[in-house]
Each structure stands twice: as C-alpha cells, then as structure tokens.
Image 1 (tube, protein in one colour):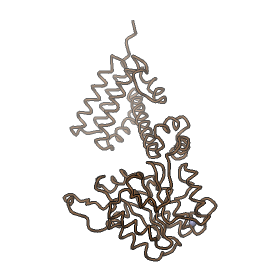
Image 2 (cartoon, rainbow, N blue to C red):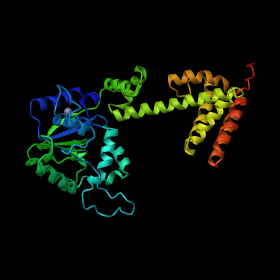
Image 3 (tube, protein in one colour):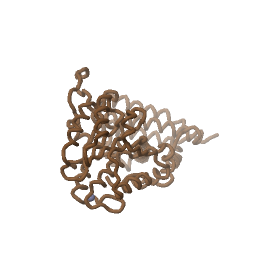
Length: 389
Ligand SMILES: [Zn+2]
C-alpha cells in the first residue's frame, strides 16, 4: 500500500512519514479510525514505508524486495491479527475454540485486504462466513503473535504487527498483549486499529501512542469518486455528502447508481427495439439471448424493474415529474419515452410484463418468452393516445 493511493488524510500521512524520517517510531500505536476512513490502509502504508529499502521523500519506493512482498502482504516480518477464531462449521457452534485459527484465515485475510484496503468488519465476516458476535481475538492469537515477535526478524529491521479491530480482543487476550506492550521485544512495532476507544483496556491505551483518523472530507471523497470511479463533478458532489466521510459508503452508492443507470439504458433500448420490431428482430433475438443468460432471479428483477418504470412513465405522462423520484439524467431519458405510455396502453403493458414474470417463475423458456413479450410490447407501444378533447 502506498500513501499516495490512500484517499485524503494528508495530516496523518505527514505525521507518520515524519516519524519515520526522524527515527522516532513509537513501538506501540493505536490508530483510532472511523468507518471508511482508511485506517487499515494507512497502517499498511506506514508499515511498508518503515520496511522499504529505498524510501522516497514521501512514500515507499514500491519496487524494492520489501515493497514487492508488502504489496502481496506476504512479507515475513509483517504479521496480522484480526477477529476470527469462531466455530465456522454448522453444528460446530458450541465447541470451544482451543487454538489460534489465524493461519487458517490468512489467505482469506490477504485476499480481502488486497481487494479492499478499506475493509470493514461486515465485509470480513461475509467473506469468511461467520456471524458478527462470534468473532473475537482470543488469547490463542495473542500468545501466537507474541511468540512470533519474540523471534528475530527475518529480513526487515522491524517486525510489524497490525492488529485490526483491537476492541475485539477478549480480556485474556488483552492482558497478554498488555504484557508485551509493557516489555516490548526490540525492533517491534505494534499497530492496533480500533473504532471504539472505550472497549480497549485503559492500561493498553496508556501504553500506546494514539493516532486519530477522522472521517474523510466531502472534497476528498469527491476527488476520489472522480479518479477511482470516473464520476463527473456533479454526480460526485451529490454522492459525497450522503457518504458522511465513509469511503465504502461512497463507493457503494456510486456502484448502485451505475447499476441503476445500466438497467435504465437496457430498458430504454429494449423499448426502442420493441417499437420497431420488424426492423429490429435480430437485435431483439440478441437481447433475448442476453436475457436467457441471466440467472432466473435476475430475469425476474429485470421484469419487475420494467414493470415499475413503465408505471412511472405513465405518471410522468399524466402528472409530470413531481410524483416520481428520478435522477436528472433519467428525467431526460424517461421524459421522451413517457410520451409512449398512456392510459390506453399502460394497463395492457403492465399485464404483459406481469404475465411474463409469472411464467418465468414457473420455468418458461426465457428466449421464447422474451421474444413473445417484446412483440406484444411493440404492438402496445404503437397504440396512439386518442387526441385530448
Ligand atoms: Zn521499497
């Protein structure tokens, strides 16, 4: 992880970098972050910078042997502790876990972090399929990690332990860690990451240097939405305040919007092809193939969506945009199309779509059904609205 790839947090970055340059890296640090702030990403970048063999002014070199290993999270002097250690198999629930299961989860951990260095607990639990309340850091993990750091480092000057969600340590685990923080082995750096200071033993807090990592600023999220997701200024400015300083939330909203836009485009293209069905038969056959390739649940979702927006279009036609919730871009697209949906064809269109939905649920052939529905829709869309009296 490079500092430059982390969103915002200029002050924290500066502070961490300075501490390395001035050779005053505190052996135990507590990063107190908020969701989606980048606390884990910062810890990774910091550890990589400390271990980099060819440090630049404000970042790791990204090419030395250490950086190469850090980029895959496989450096032998980088150790992770994270909540797991729960019985994961069904029927295993009551069994007490009597050993560290850290290594069993290590591949999942690396994969999850590399995929999203802004990882949150719920993503992690989803990835390893355990329930929230079960996941703790037990004394077995603490013992194991203390053994590891009591050995000499393999390659780097420092051994680094990153403990993610330190508030998930149970009491015996906390006491064990406290001991090692009181008498730290030489050249060892503990970075504890936590969200809730009150759930950490006060004695641990007093042994660590506290680094607060606050929520991202709207401007920082706007910039990141533009560079990471290709959002335009307007779109990014709408999403950023909704995310409340949480990058994961901003990404989630952005991806939902993208998916929604794709669905809108697909629907409108379908309607255009239906309208001109004599000329567009091959396009409709292609769309039918795509439709048939979707999983049944997706086919149903698409039909449900089509039903919903067809009704919305009638509302737009009759009452304007006041009663529908649409983005500005959708207003433009649906504004034109809604002229084709009126009281004389809307009910029949909705019926045709509902019927298709019903048959899909009962395993109808999706290709035949899609073509049949398309032709029905095409004929219905051509019904002209009687002139207003
Ligand atoms: Zn390097």
